[in-house]
Image (cartoon, rainbow, N blue to C red; front, top):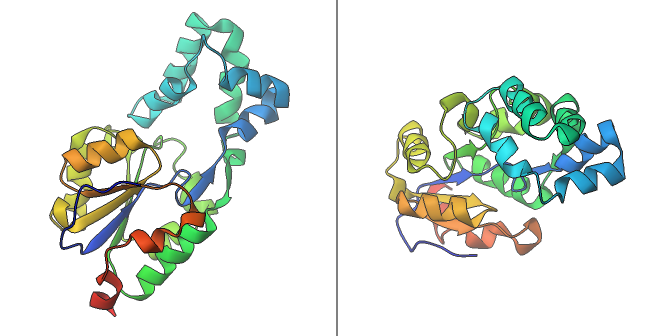
Length: 213
């Protein structure tokens, strides 16, 4: 865990995948090609699944991303297609400790936002499967909808604008250091989330809950 430094925090911004929502792409891919092939695909040295996923997360279409795989990595095309076709299976459930904290902060009236790298096309699965996203968060900035993805500094400025708070008054949790570093550069108090078992409640600035209680 790391933080960009102390500040007068008035709101919380949450990454979603593996911070609030347990995201397991292996499960979706395995539904199409089997467990062993899914593991082989995700470990492949000649294919970058993260980059493949990042295109739609940045505003591109899945059809374009999949067509590119057919052209450049035809031997992985079936595996890549299985991900979108079975995407819902990749959403394994809530990350319990984190969502419990979201509920506690919501009850105290603390402003909370989501900031997620997620494709526009696949986003509707999230609020349908996880009602807390609509019920407990004041809004979610979805990268694929905005055409901007973390760690682009502009997406952090956008979530601060939507929240109506200066970046320095927001604390941001993400499980990827590159995204945390991007948020810190944009002026948010930024913390690497390392797991619900490490009680993210302890990382919320002292006094934030008391201020809203």
